[in-house]
Figure (cartoon, rainbow, N blue to C red):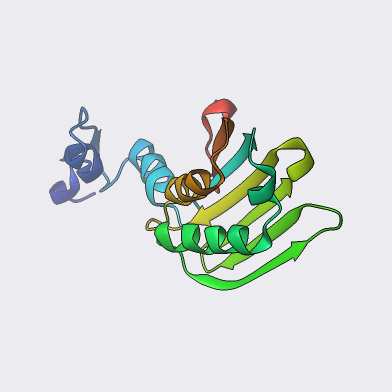
Length: 160
């Protein structure tokens, strides 16, 4: 190997101000794995939310819920491709938004004061938490439970 490539500090370690490694390559494997986790094109965010103690009339109003979902999509910096909604008999509403960045699904059970919302987005610009915040402000649950999962990465903490 030519001497010009010897003892180069990994440029990612240097940029991230970590203890730079001494490798004979431009990016060490640890940094390549880190870079993939930060910038991988398949990386996405999945939010699974449950709202309890919601108003029956809001949960049973197809127009309000569809507008809420579409507004949430816009606030999250996502591109709405198509939205669908359906009002069930005797009660309940489902809204589905297809996004350029993935999807948003909202399902209500007004008789129980319950609403479930699933938002999956990919890309660096999308902000699914902002979408959820908009919907939460409209539905006004007394309790909410939110689970977040980062998707699309090969290397996971739980895998070791």
